[in-house]
Image (cartoon, rainbow, N blue to C red; front, side, top):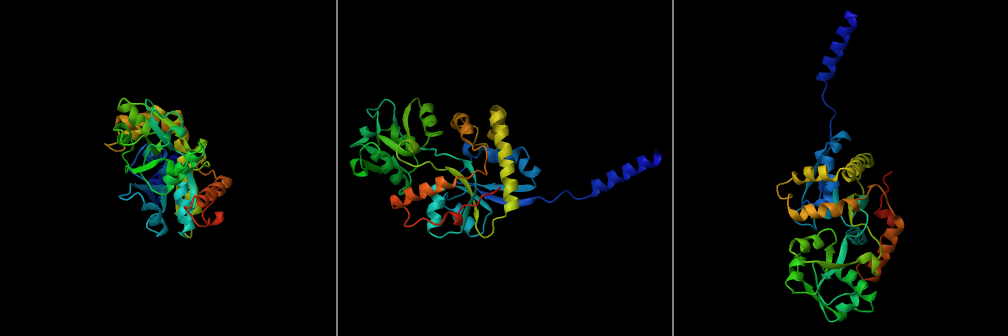
Length: 313
């Protein structure tokens, strides 16, 4: 018995002396500053789920939100949070990017007007001003939505309001805005004691698409590492949906700028929208949306699906 105790003690000392398993370092570029859309990523990091799966993930907010996919394509980061339409347009240009996962598997984009305005239907926008932030894609989405109500883009006046969507609405600079995220802009209006009326893009002429996705470089994507990344995100998402209040407490302490009323309101609207399975892939959705982009003149020819979609199973 004494010998057994000595042997156990020796083994314990040996194990304690062994170096911890090396963590696979990962650079992940966000699409924008940290916000509730990134809830699963922040929780995976703060609750040690990335570490549990053998990853040391560095999340970086970009100075230029247009840069992350191009930086990944150039090999300067491992992954980037981006958008399905962006990926498909960049793939059509020949950038070597692949979609390896999803964070929000539905559009967040919407068309919004003030609830107390004369605009009750999309058809009521005829002769009105509509603000936008990003030329090209938002104009194409708006065009499809207007056509669903018998209007054309020429029936409205487009006003570039940069990203001051709610400010432009409340100041009556415009009568409506396209590009409003349904989990943010309506809450921003509410904070300012104003209510908005919204129309969902996927209900008015725009095919369903993934809002937030994860991209990697096509030639160097590490499948084993990506499986670990997605497993950690899936675990974080499951925990978040079961523990929204505790999740908010963790998220709001991740950065001093996060603990504000807008993020708190957006938090409750965002969690139900997070993809339960970050590895899920609907190829038909990508094929249909590529057709939409081509029809709207945003791409000349769609890239082959296999060139930019990777099923991580």
